[in-house]
Amino acid sequence: MHLNWTALGQVAAVSVGATLAVVVVFALGVLGLARLEGASALRGGTFALGLTQALLCFLACAAVVAYGIYLIVPQFH
Image 1 (spheres, one colour):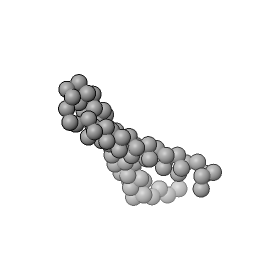
Image 2 (tube, helix red, strand yellow):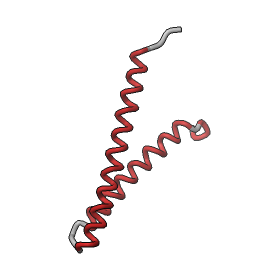
Image 3 (cartoon, helix red, strand yellow):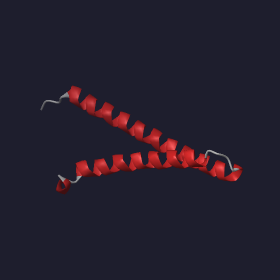
């Protein structure tokens, strides 16, 4: 049995990188929600910015999850 260590390393690196990217984007979405809460308490001008940031970040996370499900489920191909 022969293992392709280069391919295994590439898959591991891409997996770790994608996981970190999704976690960072999700954290930015939570930050947007915090800005949204802070703006509603202070009546500041960052209300729209926080809402837009949260929506875009959570949509990006949902798109990554949907793409992963698309790759896993063979009926979608």
